[in-house]
Image (cartoon, rainbow, N blue to C red; front, side, top):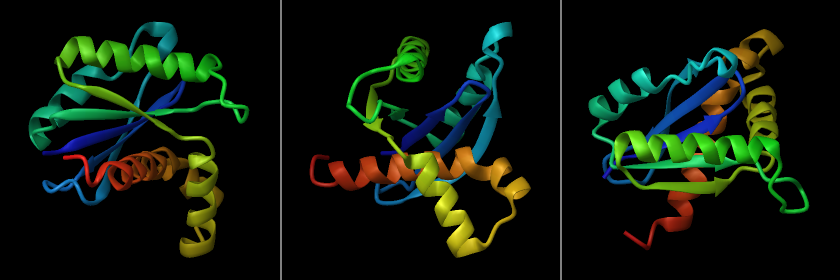
Length: 142
């Protein structure tokens, strides 16, 4: 069982994948997207799904702090709906409030990463955090 975690933004999608046992999450890459041009990275996602033998997706759901669904969460849900349709695989959502903030803090504190370098990897690290939180939450369910 491999699970793919996605941190969907307006310009990029951070991608992480679990190990075959579903215990740990590893960052894979960042896919550039352009919503205005209808480019959502689905072709690259298809290659990664095949390469890693993915059987389920976890999409980060950026809820508002009051637990409501705003425009970014709606966009993430729309992306999840589209990948469910394209890949015919289960799609689950993981609350990702503050995951990008946590990822940035981790990069600053543990890796002392410069702002320019953080910007290049932040979405991938956020995808890892989303997926790892999901794996930890569901570890007894599979």
